[in-house]
Each structure stands twice: as structure tokens, then as C-alpha cells.
Image (cartoon, rainbow, N blue to C red; front, side, top):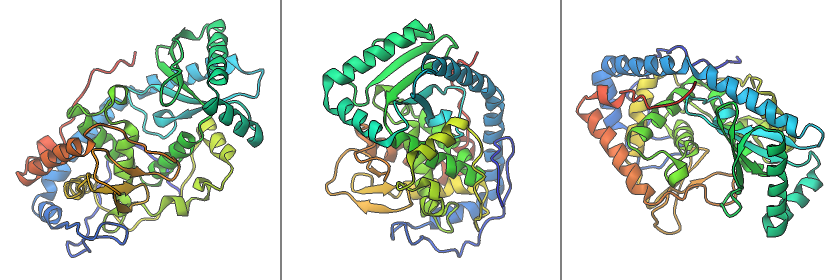
Length: 375
């Protein structure tokens, strides 16, 4: 049955028998859930009570997210008018497209120069390999944006790993435009599909995002983790856990296949309609139970030796290093270059595990409100 997502309610679900298997076929064989099983068995009412408080505070904050959504819609309209006489499309990615919008969300866009596959390939070859072509194209784009008075347009970030143009929109929202990249478009549609499949996906993502913020390790602009990394951790776990909340979403959803025309993904993200993803899961655990199991799972992962993928699988790294290794089939290269990432993750999940062990669920589910400008 199709299900539309809503963050404005908490679903109380029955928990599974503690005799459930300790691993799934795609998870690492040494993960032992006896710790989380015991905590859930002895403290479930307290877990769900404090989780409910977290979600209540989250929902209170999300009551203002419509302001951000309106800013995004107006900013997209302003930018669309800059290029309406051409074949250019501006495709939203990240939280502006994956249904995980928050009060702190910016607008990230991918500029696609053409709907024609050959023209796109030619553009990407020239943009990635020819510095003069790339710089000149970005200068012309900036000039066009300035002429249309969309806001304050900064000098292009020519030398960035992902070259962008940043705009401080007159709609009072930051806009980053990157060029031609299909990977984040497919990835955003993947996350959105997972969020639509089960409402607990989004709630877990918001909870873990809040914990990353609390630990001061979430800010990609200064070399820390991004929300992409948080979402990947959540989605991986929900496919790797016993009785997975998520199936192999990519296999289930033909629109996520890399063989599918990327123009179809563009159409979905551009129109912002619901996917109406069929949701069939045997897992009926509460959000609180899933949080405790997620803490148990990641506190046992040695991120220096082990990498994870976005389909619930794990693998041994070719060599130990200080990066979080996420295998994402939509991206050809590394997706995380956070310095000392394994130590940062170990510290966070170790702290959360200690709180869980001490029955300090007020701390596990404490909602930290940060200064976020939405007006």
C-alpha cells in the first residue's frame, strides 16, 4: 500500500521477540545485538517516552519549515527565469529534494545545460578537462545571474573539488549551483525514495543529524561531516539490521537503476511530487528501539578497517585509513574526506552507548535546538 510521509506524528509499534537473529545476511557477521536487546527489554517504556519527547520537539521546530520551503520555491522561480529562454534546467538536490528539509537548509542545485545525452556528455568532458572552458562558462553564468538581480552572486569557486557558484538570494537563502553532475541527482532521489518508503527513516535521520550537531562534527563547509554522510549511515543500518526496515531499495525501485535515463530522475526532483513508494516491511519497531539498535550497531564497527555501502553491506578496506569509506554506486570516487573520521564516529557512538548502558535516555534523546534563521 502506498504511504505518504508525515513527520507530525509518532507511530508506536510492537517490538520483535528478543530471540530474533542477531545479524542479517548483508550485515557483518560479528555484530551482536544482545546489548540493545537487553536495554530494550528492560527499559522500553522509558526509551519510547524520551523518544516521543524528541519527536515532539522536532515537530515543534518543523512547524516553521514551510518558511524555508517558500524561500526555496521563490528562489528557484527567480533562477528559472534567468534561463527560461534556453535548454538549461536547475535541479534541486540534497534536503531541498529528499524530504529532509529543516530550518537550516540551504538550496543546492545542479545546472544541466541540455536534455540531450550527447550534448551533456560533451559539456561534462569540456567542463572537467578544459580549465578555460570551465572558467568561461562559470563567468558567463555568473554574469547572467547578476543581470537578473537574483541576489548577491559571489565569485565562482573555480578550484573547488566541485566548482560552484554561490548566491545569497534576495529571498534570504543561500544557493549553491554546481554544474552537470548527475551523481547527486540520483543520490537525492535514492534518499527520497527511502524516506517515502517508511516514515521512521526520516525521523532517524533527524535524530542522528541532531546528535552530530551536538557533537560539533556536522559542517561540510569546514571539512566535517555532511548530511549526506548522516543519511548514508541511517540508510545503511536500516538495511543491515535484523528484520530490516528497508529492503534493497535500489533493486526494488526501477527508477533508481543507473541504467534508467537520468532525465527521469530530473523530472521527479523538479516537480517535487510524491513517488508513492509501496511500503511492505515486517519490522514494526518503534523509533526509540531503532535508535538503541543503531547505537549498538555502530559502536561495534571499526571504521578504520571496515567500510559500508548504501545497500546494507560492509567490506574490509584495502588499507586502514582515517576516512569514512562509504561505497555509493552513484559516485565513482570517495564520498567522504573528513579528517580523522573513524575517531570522531567512535567517540560519538561510544558516548551514546554509555548513556544507553546507564539508562540515561534523557541524554540519548535530548533535542538540541540550534540557532537557525528561518525568517
